[in-house]
Amino acid sequence: MDDPRKFDWNHIRAFLATAEAGSLSAAARRLDQTQPTLSRQIAALESDLGVMLFERVGRSLQITTAGIELLEHTRAMGAAADRIALAASGQAQSIEGQVRITASDVMSAYILPELLREIRAQAPKLRIDVIAANDIRDLMRREADIAIRHVRPDQPDLIAKLVQEADGHFYAATAYLNRAGRPKSLSDLSRHEFISFGDTAQMIAYFEPIGLHLTEENFRLGSQNGIVSWEFARQGFGIAPMSEPVGDATPGMERVLPDMEPLRFPIWLTTHRELHTSRRIRLVFDLLADFFAK
Image (cartoon, rainbow, N blue to C red; front, side, top):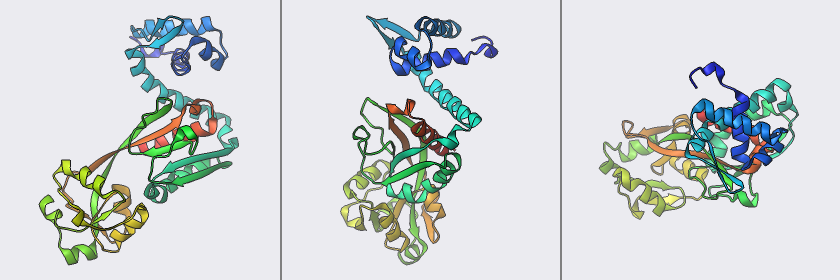
């Protein structure tokens, strides 16, 4: 588009609805428009952009590579438009029902409360059930509505959004470091005691690529419960990895090797495709996405 002022939201909305519904007829029903009108809007958008967004395969539409790239951006626009509409009409205050969020126990206890206050302010009638679990809950079985995880799900019927590349560090209690010494290098670090967060072998494998070589002997204490493991670290039993917001905010804890590059881990939001028809799930999903983006 040569002139950004010619940008037409109706054309974008038509594209977004068609891409998500998979057909013009389903998208037309969703937007309460006629199929020819929707087709003209998509054609106008393709003309403005100078790309083909859909290919007709038999009686169905197949989104093109250019369409997939555009979809990532338009979903964010659509979510923003929905929030504006909810806020302008005051509808967020009237949204009722339950939304179940599953997240790790550490995130549930230390990260989510700030976000839950914002949800309560915007939608006070919503009931939020937080399932604090470190295993990957199956959204397809409706064990939760929204999952916050560090891995992307592989089920094709789920919607997944990467909302943050978070930073983490190694931490230890000042009392432990005073007693065991403060490591100056990764090789020093390998001579210290570590706290296990459940799967010790998985932790050992995760640290190998950064040059930290640990064995089972480094892990003499741990728990499947992340809050318990973090408390063990806080009580001075050893070193533990932790996300930056939690580690830096915990009294009595110091970063170990503070000049070391942070440990990077992704944060994915996942939900089922009901996201686009349930106002309460959409609202919570978008608030979560904004929260982590900040």
